[in-house]
Image (cartoon, rainbow, N blue to C red; front, side, top):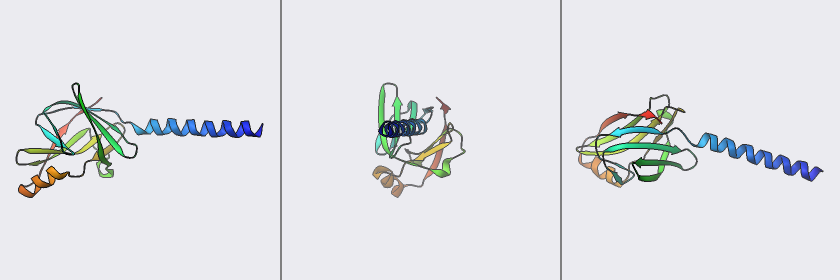
Length: 139
């Protein structure tokens, strides 16, 4: 009887922790129209309508969808400075090149940022940086 109670307790704890982890892992999507081509973690993306969704497990992964084309980016990091911002994408601009730097998800209040990849570092060495903000809507 003791073994059954212990097994039941362990199973219930595992189920509870799994459901909690899944409940906290995914955030709402951000739907946004990006009016220029851009790069995220050395992946070039055309201008267009996008859906960004995040899995906040470790490591943080972002799925980027443009119609039927989608990419999964696993180099994002949680950004505690991005909390309490509206649903926004922040791009770094160097001349005519744009690099996705941050995504703020309004629901729940979460932000992720992308460390500069090699192509952004090269662009930064040639030009001054400007931040461009594109506001999205919650999906």
